[in-house]
Length: 277
Image (tube, rainbow, N blue to C red; front, side, top):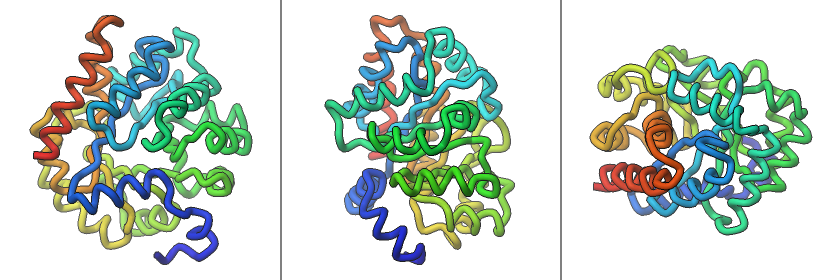
């Protein structure tokens, strides 16, 4: 790898690297589900995470609820609102990861959210806590690479992968910049718009990926708008991982607390089967 020896030594295989390496060996693709921490309730989040893993999830994206989630469509916005009403905080999310790690020391966990709650805690304390509880990566939607040097230094020092979004509109210079900073995997947003928006254009993804691959050696996950097993399967052929968020959060919204874990597990198992088929 071209990232200098210092970082290389620092990042002896992380959980994320190990997971993708194993999948590559098996010629399989990663299934990366997203849920919002604290939705439908705080006590159900960790059981949901374990359910996702049991159903075949490879990497977990755990949303940190925020009052103004500008990259998210109505489904995930509502999840954030429910979680905040349930008293969910960034500290609470970190405590959940610690709880999850008591039973699962292998599955990578990526925190996904916005810069504000982290800024309020302070990046240094946040990065340190992430390392302590076993967070593997952090994706802050509203922190572009240009703005983030200090933040990423803290993450790297604590062996946390900074994970970036790339979009259909991202140009070569930006892709190169992300390629330098990114660790773990890169998240390609398959459409212009918010999460859970319109339908995916597979040919557009197919056209864009070679441009990304020119600069990015890391695995590439694709998300935003993958709503069913057939789409998940089709997208998985084009990249290294499939991210499914709104569809899972919708399932949570439409379930009762009694059957939510079973319903989500069933949905994720269907996605897993489709991708592996």
